[in-house]
Length: 394
Image 1 (spheres, rainbow, N blue to C red):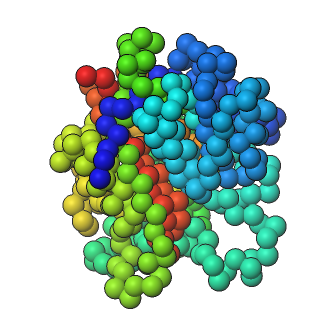
Image 2 (image 1 turned 60 degrees about the vertical axis):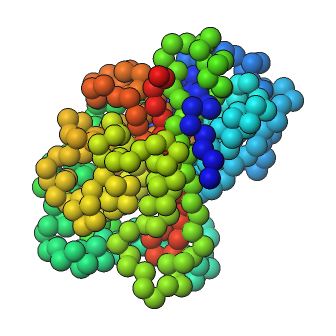
């Protein structure tokens, strides 16, 4: 299988504050993110050859983004792949640039969930529950099953599980408190996380990400062009994407303690990037912590921890800002919420800033290689997982 290593450069990115933006439209958010990216790259909308528009609920066609940004007769592709929408839009744009079709492209993801009628993970509460129950389990319930099965499979007590999940929440809220673009910027105690109101047993309030509005954008080009634009551009080192086909429902031997799509997408991205030991070689990872149990399992699926051992690494602070491999340095979905079309690009924004040394109070030392991961779907049926690895220029 071919790779995309060093064929695409990121020369600009933008990201709004993720929040309850009652006073802003999705157009306002898209324009804000795009123009931060334009300014960062030193370009204008007139320089863009093509665009990719990632959104679940923000417009039926690519022309929606064209109208927002006044783009004049260029190809615009709308991408929708649930929670991996922004990552998939980025992935498709990378392929077009690597193929030599375009010199400079825009990728933008945005969502307005708070006042759209949409709730958790894009579910519409106006749709009768009885019409949904046979097709998908609501995310908190689905990931609660993952947590319960993980506890049983690895012989954890309830207190041991809750403490591990609580430490993830405490870590991410600490990181979010250092990030002015995060929705939640307040630190929490372990006691508060463990004793929070229950959402779907054993997942409490601080185990679940919020619902928010936001937008993020990226400007991509080829490395030979990037060298003329700026010194601190970032290179795409690998992209892996895997979609399931409801195998989890069909297989009687499925263990429900891992996410196969995450494992396989990580393996593909590592192969392209030449990574043999991700825990040792990666400097940071931004992963899809829609729930704290998801982050814990992902750390095993992506090879940061051995199977069943993430709890020990969490206790040893391996994933903190000062740890061996910092995870969710920006606060993650836990502190940003999850406007579906924007989240994947928001993750890349953090890796981009860390690699440039521009992450301010949460900056880690000597960041050279970072991973951004998005996951859509649930562990009880199947999902789509995208892993993107970015690195500094040689």
